[in-house]
Image (cartoon, rainbow, N blue to C red; front, top):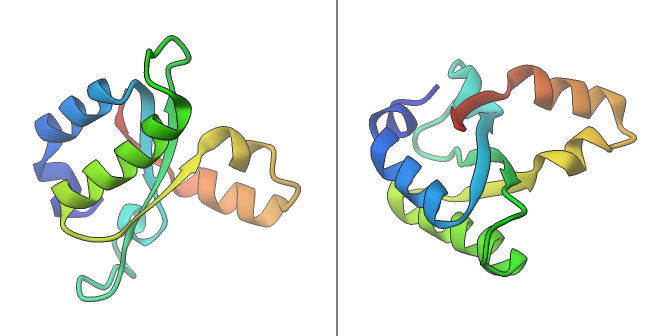
Length: 105
């Protein structure tokens, strides 16, 4: 996992609580670490939201993405875990879920 993610655990947890996140996972090059380019790579996250949140779903999703971008200082791609789990592309689904590393929840 990239240092930027690991170092900001408390701030990340506060953001996740604020947006009703049940679980947040990093995947892709930021999780693998070996092919992450600090000058060009973004952060890819899988997210599961707590359905009991009072926030509207769009506010949860886009608010979380914006808050993570501000915290980490780089672009963030946010994908709902359920969408990956339901993907018909077996190769992509397995690759993403294999690399996923829980960072909250």
